[in-house]
Length: 302
Image 1 (cartoon, rainbow, N blue to C red):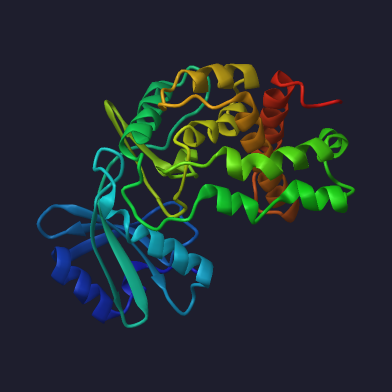
Image 2 (tube, rainbow, N blue to C red; image 1 turned 90 degrees about the horizontal axis):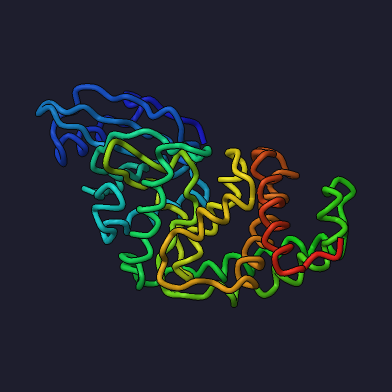
């Protein structure tokens, strides 16, 4: 989707923003964010700031419109976890969301990073405050995983470029992937995409942004999804597992459940990497994470 500058937004839409939050004096584009037409910090005439993101509806496909629809319900999230949604509207072919502006830097997941303790505290807080989900009628994470089932496809038609370990263990990976939707069932709201760029961390505080992929599942799932990201950032799988085990989420998953989720995620990320446009290091880390958790259960014959 092409990114627009603030002055390219129709005057009628910019006037509606002025009416809702005050006259915009200047607008700084965000350095990242591919799934929207605009993503700007708006500097207002009263000295305050608002973060505004929007889509040009004719340019946005159903997938992007669905993402914006999900984010439009995030006013139900606790303010300790996410910037507050201040306003939203649709006008003249555009849909805009205005959020509380929060300063901070992306998360650093590397070993000995000072951010790790803050990340752990926030993930534990999510388990406490988002179970049950404060947003109603949310798709389950299990349903999302059940729609993909990558290893089952690969088992039936093995790609020639599949990593050797995955190819040798595709039958076991497919079996674990098949039970993952049942094993991760629960009523907690999950962000599901806690990549480094979706954190705003500053001394003593943090917030999580871009809640466009939320769904429901077991509260422990959120911490497990960080495993491959930690491995990609330089942790050994064993060290990543110890750090994850230190995060309290109310319920400790079985080894089988952890291995099943890891297998499903490794399949999705491997497939995305084969299609292009995804980080190879993350796909490889996801396979390493799944292999480590499966070895603990002696799942892998090779």
